[in-house]
Length: 99
Image 1 (spheres, rainbow, N blue to C red):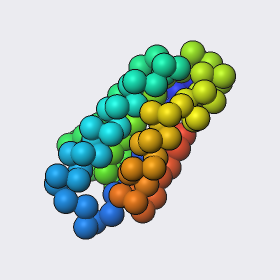
Image 2 (cartoon, helix red, strand yellow; image 1 turned 45 degrees about the vertical axis):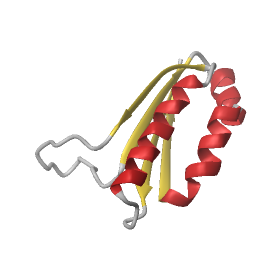
Image 3 (tube, rainbow, N blue to C red; image 1 turned 90 degrees about the vertical axis):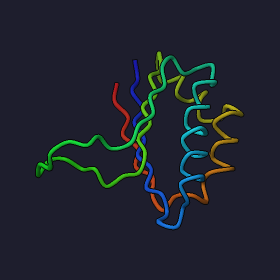
């Protein structure tokens, strides 16, 4: 199994309507055939702690069967379309992959 965690830092000028569209775009990644599970969320409203980073706008977690499935995801047309449409929305993306 491979766990693919992606954190998006959206530009401050992005409107609420654009944020909603971005979330729908993230949720569309569930349509990638090689993805077993897709989870989308915003930072949870939890008490502040020194180890908590809630500076991102949206988090995406995708579960894959293996590295080959992850690699197929990277070139899947649904993923490529998401990148093409929404790349202008963010200032930073941070990825953590674990197997």
